[in-house]
Length: 437
Image (cartoon, rainbow, N blue to C red):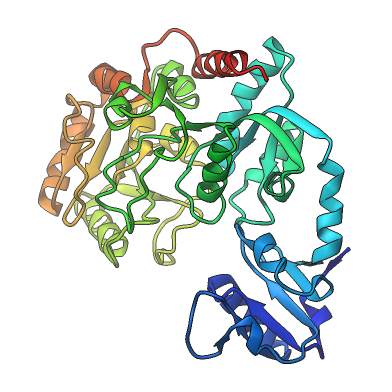
């Protein structure tokens, strides 16, 4: 049984732990005039933060934690614990929720795939389909919707009709498995702690590099240490290998790149259309994205070029005064004449499609991964150079794929004759067959 937030009307509540999710819940409760006594946290101190022994009488303690809800809840009265979903839309009584997960206690899988978003799911599905066709492995997705904000993974899992199991059933050891596959193993709320736990249990963990990755993390808010926690890694290209010298690796490629590369010859619109890729999530530079976008649009106007913006769904930059499309990046790249982007896999997708690209890299962006691209695309460091590179790429738009071949092969394994999903499935079969128990 689930409850919504109105259930807590006239109840005396504590929230735990003291984190962003509990703070958000507190605000929502106060808007409904629901009393929140205080926050409970064993590791933090501050105003309105108390320890367990300081609690007065209460009706419910609401636990909001993706990774540690069970260990937290186990220290309190089970009949007074409510577990919140990630989106705070529903709540579960602790004892009832744990009991509902026990239906998975007899489940055993060879492989579990855990996607965080729609793109992960779409990349994993072809691998699973190959495995289902060529093996008798028990395979399922891990559904993380209750413990992670919605980025479209669950909807794609449902469409695929591939079996899935809830993350919490796995974390509570109700499910047994041989191989765990994920993409961003550095994600702190669920992926990183789960991979660490599975490693300790001698369950093989495999990471699939989710796209072109700057392993140096020079432009991110924190050091992700990407793909350093999983034991083995499937990479996008040979370039990744120099950053994963301590890992067991195999080059896979990028599944979505192959259809772009094999697509028929690019036909350009009569009127030039510049596609602007807007995606500044997780960067360490405040206001950089807004300034970047303003400069790009100004250059387009100075050159009298029409533009359209493809905006990442989670990007927070204000674009209400700009021309933003609802089409997918692939649709608009196919229709456009030129891409302008910050560091992104989208640049490689564009040149694979035959659409020329300019990587606009003004200060303070530091990554050097794309600097030596063998002429596959242009790099501009200021507005004047951006103008020059736009004109250059438009003049040389008919030989993009020829220019891009060497770079795409290094980064994406583009000249491999076998499909990436088949390479990945073959590698996974070797893992399972080598560890049959």
